[in-house]
Length: 210
Image 1 (cartoon, one colour):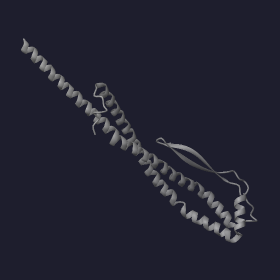
Image 2 (cartoon, one colour; image 1 turned 120 degrees about the vertical axis):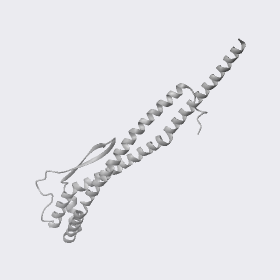
Image 3 (cartoon, helix red, strand yellow; image 1 turned 180 degrees about the vertical axis):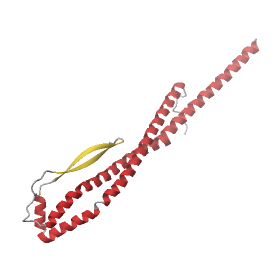
Image 4 (cartoon, helix red, strand yellow; image 1 turned 90 degrees about the horizontal axis):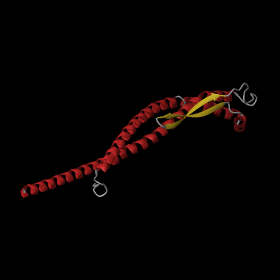
């Protein structure tokens, strides 16, 4: 692709494109460093997410089993009524942390100060008590697994955007600047040769007249 039609071959333009090329190269280096950090964090979080997921499936099966036993023993209406009337005893707080410049929600699970049981023993059985205890123990792990999954998704989106910018710099923007610089240099050199040739002719004429 030729830039001869839209590039002014002057020393000022040459300096401008050289500066722009330097800035683009610097941005390319920053983005490449960011890409490496994002990749490293994604790999680490995938490993952590895998561990977190692996620790929740068996306990979840136990919870499903306990809840199913409660439904069979007490009936759907009783279990649903207990669930709807029971106040929350666990609180999930969300705060934001940053990885590179990516905002990632982090979850913190805390147990509320409840001295009394949130439901009466007369209307329930051990299956409900067991399920409630299991859920309280498992909820922090579920939230941590969700946090890792969301973090991976957010970092992957940032990585995709960073890679697109890198590709544009490496394959389009920087090559265009370099080609413009080469065009201006070649044009200026050609002009210098033409001027030198003209000066030689003038000098030769002046010598021949003498």
